Image 1 (cartoon, rainbow, N blue to C red):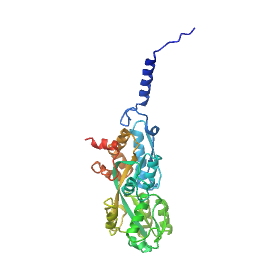
Image 2: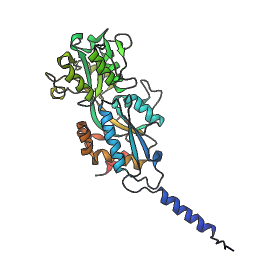
Image 3: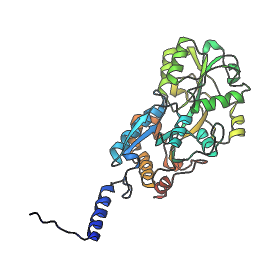
Image 4: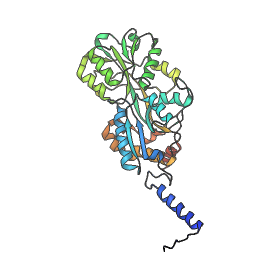
Length: 328
């Protein structure tokens, strides 16, 4: 006859506690202090159009997460970019996102299309996005004001490009809803429309160089021209603040005859307020500990500088990012 062993209840409780603690520990730089992995260890990164810099860097960053944050894997997702990315993080559909600082400022303040303050925090300020305004030479567009009545792509719906396109048109005295034949197209669709002649001009906000723009300028040559924006910068800054900066497009970037007076907006990497501090610290560290790897993916990563990365106002830094930047 089999004998049943008896263990005191307190001993059983102690054994269970040890087992639970052991299962929850992750260790390493991506450890969560003994807690279960956030989102089961599977993270989604909201990026942008497939021919844009967000998508390229997002893929490289996802690879770094899988290699250097123990227990975690990440996937870069194609999106319309800034505004959609913020919405995805706020809903919990994405965990990490690239966004322009002007759209993020609207989000935390709950204005200009956001019904209320969005629950987002910044991991870091990244490189700057340059606003490209490009027209077919035969369209006779030498300024944004000359776009009246023209066929113009203002970017994907809910993108940062759409935000700044509408603001630039308004600053030039054009109603974005009625003053142009607006088309809300992704960058690949826009480039094809310019080649086909179904568009006269387009707006694009992206890093340098943007692959889709390079494709267009190489294939069309002097049949396209860059439109200067310096005349509209004072009006943008008067209404929206210093998030908009003077930044010429250097002639070497797209082989233009001369530098083109332009406008730039900083990019941010954002997460939800719900992200655990330890994970946010590890994700922030990746940007700087492995910046050389990201630079191999796209040269804009070289412009992610620790001295500037904390300047995410008005988007607050995540406490985990603050912890990283507090280290010497």
